[in-house]
Length: 385
Image (cartoon, rainbow, N blue to C red; front, side, top):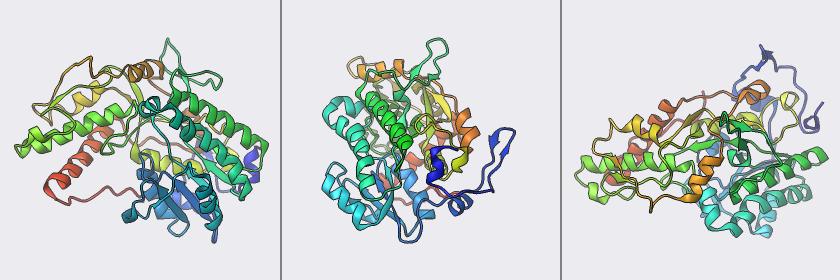
């Protein structure tokens, strides 16, 4: 029996088929393995960010009365209160006053932004998530989750696939911080007193506007640019484009650099599923489960969408290329193996590259029509039926 036994009740309703976890509905998993009960609460940090935008709606659906949403800045329209996670006193007050027993920490600087502000990245991506362990123990928190990343692993130079190696040191501060995070969370969980968990996310395709300053977010940036150009060109206003020069786009990374990717919708559902997995199926691997669906490059994005966006063209400009992001693309794996996640807790991919890219393009078209025309065209239904 793993250390997870201390934190969850036993259930007899979980089974496997041919070595692969059977997928119970999220509703059933919440019923069998609730994160909190009665007046206990879940504190979500960074609820308005890249991942939070997709994970938050799932928590709101299944725990409508037991979540505290925070971020910077506040977003009253979405129930998000302002909380600076680096303000330790404010963080402790939020935990104590709201009877918080589970913390979902989504606050982070992504790779590009981390390189520009290494000191802040160190505090936000490593120091604060690790300090949450002691803060959580002080106030009776049972469980902490903070995402990790493919930036924390190396790749096999023959296959370009991910290699599990928690002792390696990535070149970027973002990856280095994630390695520290993984090691601290694994050690804390083995020690007991609190369950600290992580997942190694592939690049998350969310097409948040404006795009975040990460490396795999360069795929988001191109989709955003193509959607904006299409909407404004149809209006005869292409000179107003913010993300391209009237349809001429210069990428910050090389067009053929390949990354393992994960659709935002999937990251919301599957993170939630992992957090509600039967503990008897979760091995002592708190940080080494992967989440990814497909591999893609900027070439894939452009080739998928170019027929929909006539006149959009790629201009190679070495002055725009970000050498740090290029280096990360050469260091990070091009593909990952989800089989352990599939076997242990029932991970299931929802999108291939074509579906994910086109889905996010349509989402951006909707957002830009709303922005430039004031047209309400509806939103995604993010809740699993």
